Length: 202
Image (cartoon, rainbow, N blue to C red; front, top):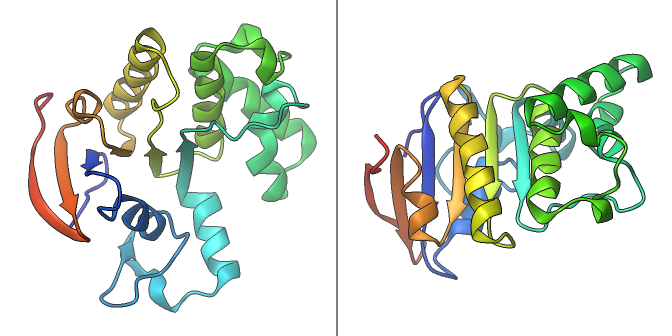
């Protein structure tokens, strides 16, 4: 399987099909037991955990179903966390966090904590956090699984915008209507690729 820069790909399959394992490999959270995974032409199989952490922080932005926001921190402080881990200076972190939140339409919610935001807004904060390091790829794992239909459309519209701006999007989902938003749909079952075809949005 090859995913080119700027692609919008959905990986689809039932529970236990291998979606999560594939996501962990693509996201450099795990390494394959066989074969090779090249990210930007670099084989990640020989990297140690420190190297893998560096690749994750620089090249991949993660968006999860559970949002994974810290409830005691404001939106902008949640968004700046990856920059903190990367050793970016405080003033620059604040500027970049503000820009990321404005990019997802939450510039007026910077000081709000997660509990003061709707589910869709919390997921937008999570997307802003994924964008703040300017990664080559956004890897979204069931990002609409906890959202109502209105918030789902809101977040998928944001992914459409990011893709239109040239960002690579890899979306892990079991929902057909979510996968159809991608330009390419890869279906997996029992650890194997069953099909790889153009999505309806192409």
